[in-house]
Amino acid sequence: QSDTNWWKGTCKGRTGLIPSNYVAEQAESIDNPLHEAAKRGNLSWLRECLDNRVGVNGLDKAGNTALYWACHGGHKDIVDVLFTQANLELNQQNKLGDTALHAAAWKGYADIVEMLLAKGARTDLKNNEKKLALDMATNAACASLLKKKQSAG
Image 1 (tube, rainbow, N blue to C red):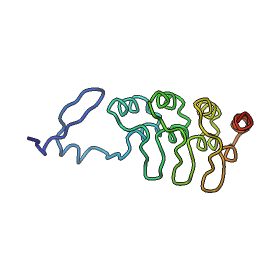
Image 2 (image 1 turned 180 degrees about the horizontal axis):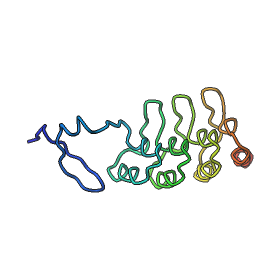
Image 3 (image 1 turned 90 degrees about the vertical axis):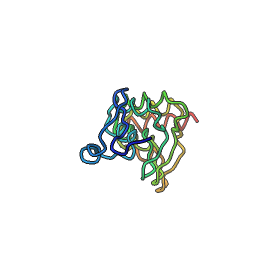
Image 4 (image 1 turned 180 degrees about the vertical axis):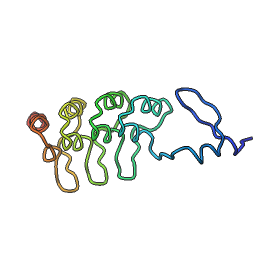
């Protein structure tokens, strides 16, 4: 029988009970914890989410994945961990049509652009404004990597 005065919680691999009034008064509700961890570059939180089977390809309200946010924030270590997840969707387009590759190119993270391309990210996807990741590139390093990949096929 469940007691509504207590909530089950897990933190750092330990599971226990938390008074429900404490949760209501003190805790921040986070709809997409994996996305938030990726956005903030919080590796331990990201690992905890993955250990608790939070879906790696889940979408937030804008249609973004955790990978999109990791790339947008330049969090290479987070991208590395996400790449280890089975069935990671590299080419998911958000509501604006942008992919993780669009985000990395726009933010100028050549190292992440290179990582995405090495994993097989598509360079031919256009966003809602008909722009490729190459069109979004804000520096020469990103543009060069994307041009090289497109010419290689």
